Length: 559
Image (cartoon, rainbow, N blue to C red):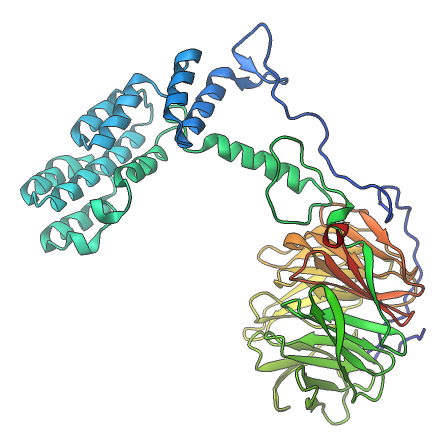
């Protein structure tokens, strides 16, 4: 293990020691893991007072039966729906509302407007807005029936006097005058789709209060919300698929890549960095042995494809091109090299006289690259090695990390020991993130919207940098006392965070929880870097001082 000069691009940097509390809430690999909200979700009908149902006695029986009835009808079980209404004595809709719905389906527009006024609607604006929509529909059906005179009368005597949505009323006048109603507005025509009046009714329902007309698929929406709540509260959920309605949702560690499935031993010295390609097909790793290895993921097995040689000293950083056909590498020789993945050829060596390059990153367009330079500046180059632009940096800190935010125009780099800066390369406005600890490394999420900071005391802080900038998570547990150890986001919807550690462990957190959900044992030296496969939520790679790369998979994947 090696200490680091401030100006060099090491795999790590010496920092003050720190001590983190215990991991009482974490799960070590091998333990049974599950996640449940606890308690039964089963409905308990109240005894005695039959106006409410449920153990908490907050659900109206009438409302509950009505949304069940609506769900039954929406599934196409009309006879069953009618039977439920008869047996319960609870109608889905009042007689007036039922009449109104049938009138809409039958195209009885004037009658439906009259009925609408008889329904107990307190808000006059709802009546006017709904009437406008109904009469507009009448207007178009008359035009489609080539009844231009009646359509004109409807516009003048019924729609205009409502005095609502005046701009739309003017459009209707223009349509009437131009006689181009068919080409200008097909949304109301009989040719616009299957059962257009049913679709129109669905839009009208959105205008009426839910106490009057039950919103479509209301029960389905409530069930979806309940499932979302259970899933979001599960610390181990990491797969896409159907969720059971019969039991409370729970996941075990079989969702998490916590089993060693491969040990890669092709490097001859400490492995300092590794990163999966954007498509998850390739893995690139770099080492103190000065080599870069390209691995290919074939049906879940990671196989060595090519060894890249050319750097004269240890290689500590890799960046994949947007198309995953090239990589950038940089290291302690303070040069950046661009490589072709298929041929293994070094396409370009970037550098500048009397200055060293310490970090590298691809531009979003794939036609330029960015580098951090020893004079603290950030520079942009074209692919042939010509310097395009230079932004002066801050003299107080190093340039060993770079990031590109989600829009491709915003760069992230160091500002000072406990801060990073986001700046627009075209307009130059800056946003500074200052933490209360020294920042040893940082990484952006795959979509460039989240920024994960690794701190000197082993903690990690997560920031949202898309829109309103704020800290959304803090994580403890990783052991770090002397060197830079890198972390990453990954898993389903980037819901997890992984980090190496100087105690030879890999730690995994859920983004919503402070303490790790599990720690992975296997390495015999410090774990310097981790990378989560963006295309396979159940594959994680880690690089260690023990000269190996471990590929971690889930029990689910291996069963």
